[in-house]
Image (cartoon, rainbow, N blue to C red; front, side, top):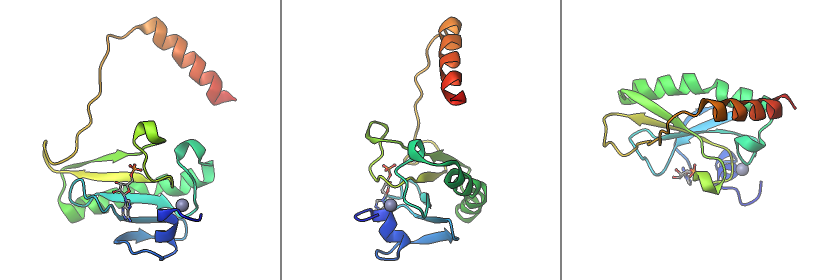
Length: 139
Ligand code: AMP
Ligand code: ZN
């Protein structure tokens, strides 16, 4: 897609530090290097994000994750890894070509953290919401 920075990386029009490539996907180092080895995995086919993704693209893209994650852990000596995917601006997406962040983790305070707010569980509300979502999934 024109003016998509990740499509330009796929086409070799702008440089990237590639760590894995096949016919369907490309993985390369994120220039921000939130932690050492921060990598992005993208489908070569332009798709906006997971909310827009067809099943075949999801299958080829997400299937590569364990292989790349293990290689990244081995190469960096990381203790663990956060695998993050942002969809739409409200969720922090800034590049609108789907990508999965692999963020190796070394110690707390290494540059990345996730904070979940926890609420007292309301099991009735949870049941109703789950039913509503499951109806949508079945569509
Ligand atoms: P997100 O905020 O989830 O859309 O993530 C976009 C990511 O793309 C950011 O972490 C940027 O650092 C990264 N990024 C932007 N341009 C490039 C580039 N040319 N090469 C590598 N990573 C990039
Ligand atoms: Zn693109």
